[in-house]
Image 1 (cartoon, rainbow, N blue to C red):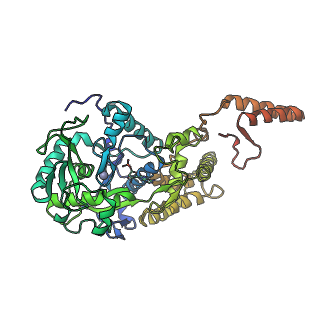
Image 2: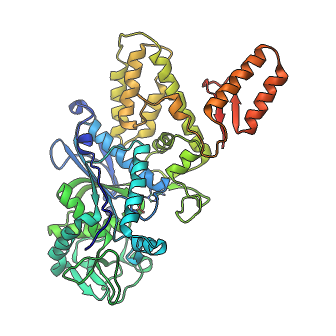
Image 3: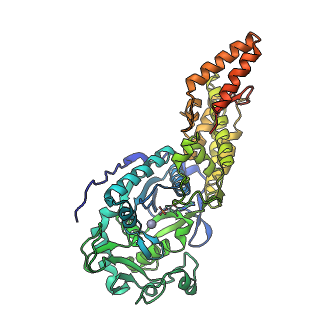
Length: 499
Ligand code: AMP
Ligand code: ZN
């Protein structure tokens, strides 16, 4: 098929393959919650010394909301912990640029085709624009580059080959596509713990389907129509199904079985059970294809601002526009365990930002001290951090450990080492983040930082000269311009730009 404006992929290469710790042997065994068994299990890699992880990536028809980004902060944390534990990590995140329907359960239109039609634009342009926006969020949240960004449309020939290999035994053809017969594999839906009857109500019926849960692995272009994205196949012109894509890309890049498959908790219900069914068919086995299936719980927001259809929906860029450093959002995510629901609020984000500021200022103070002799704080921290992470990625505990390292006693260099040890898995950039970085300028600000500093200097002079009328006037003018003057702020922050 004809494609234009091909998306260029930047591959992170070696970044994630290097262990960030070489002390794996001395560590506590890693226990992770496996959604398949609903139990904590010890992580034993399929290939000694390696960890192979696949994460379901975004469908690039719109900007990701901050809830979506929680899924990638979680996957990144998992990757960092595996690296910390000394495993050679191969992480794959896919980009879905075809095949995801408006309803996960196999009904509706292709999300990409729908937006392209609404905007009268090429799907390739839309995919490129939103993939780049997603990558910008990945960078802003300090999520490490995976070894591979796999782009679904690059794998269509492999998808056709895969579907052909399972078609005879496991699929049947209807006018609308090639369907997977879920009764041909053992324990379909075990991951979701769904009974067949649950499926009946939640899945829109397609005429001719043998079972409600059966799903299209190839969707034929309806007669007389042309889609922007369509390929020739043994079942006619059409496009792959979303579930097929992840099975194909994970097998191609990681081999079956691999270690861990991740996604948001909604994927536990339909998308991942369908991937598992395909993996079972492909391998002629009951194995799900991955040793662990791990799911992050949702970020929720009560006023509906996380809906992509609401005008000002919650994107990382919106947080930045309102004056929040994106790493404050990362910290907010890490304060909750990944399996807990997390409620978003601006107050919660503000509290996370203050916590980050405190840490940055403590690091500044520790850096200004000159003692050189270590006293073992880092070693002590390593064992505490390791214990917390080994307990199903207990990041709230690691944050507590990092924040309990005070700057009052002991050797500064030692304490700094201990903080940076925690940051290997927290990913808050604590070694480089500065106060200036944290002063993110709200988009609506009408005064520059230089003008604020100049006004505050003039106010200081006026106060020294006991000209309180003048100093009050300067302060009132700053308030009118959205500047909160913070005399005697415990963090030494002096001023803040409000939105
Ligand atoms: P999508 O682009 O819709 O396929 O979603 C990308 C990822 O975000 C998937 O892993 C979803 O399960 C996850 N996700 C969607 N909504 C939320 C949310 N509110 N909180 C956390 N994860 C989410
Ligand atoms: Zn997927």
